[in-house]
Image (cartoon, rainbow, N blue to C red; front, side, top):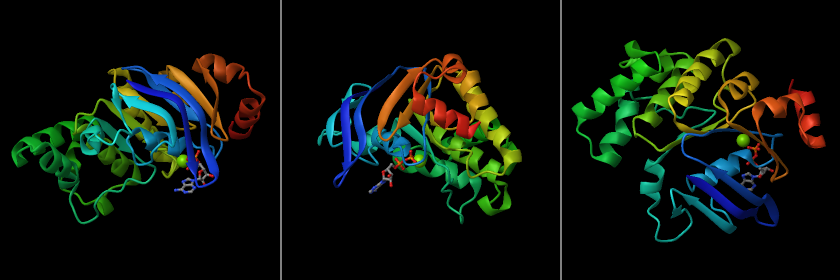
Length: 240
Ligand code: ADP
Ligand code: MG
């Protein structure tokens, strides 16, 4: 579904991604970990073309992401993204936040979009918050709204960039639970997170990235038990 081949990316003279070769299959849950500044967010952002790779190739569902003929809006409709900060519209209700894109980008009627939004609010466990404003709900609930908003577009794949790292500790579990249930339903997911419990329970693979390079692409159980790379060992010893 997602395939990087010999992908490099530079910000000016600085090479942020180095010879990335990575294939993610439909239904897989892939967790990306690595030190701050190692290129994790950039890697994710290349997938929906918030950033572009400088060299090599990247395809999503066989479509060349960086081909100038590729319809970026269409590509982004296939790819849901959830960020560390939720980026909900503060002056819109939860329901309006979720229905906005389905109405504007998919041409759904308001009624249909609302029906879908209610279904996903139920799925993320906050069916009663449809008419609340973001400031009236907790951080964990806001992040669940952001997930529902992504799902309402019926994406082929969901990207998560440290979705729990801005949350108070007591709210992390509720967001991870939603993500776990998505994973178990077969959603293709690429998740940047250091939450080991999540990775152990649902990830098919762990990708360890350091200084722009993929150093390990491993089974979670094996990775956490005994990472092969020295830098991965050091990294784990610091976060555990
Ligand atoms: P991570 O998510 O692993 O913390 P990032 O992908 O955000 O890492 O960043 C990787 C490196 O690229 C960092 O050194 C960061 O400062 C740099 N970087 C990220 N975005 C830009 C940008 N738009 N312009 C220049 N440098 C950037
Ligand atoms: Mg990041």
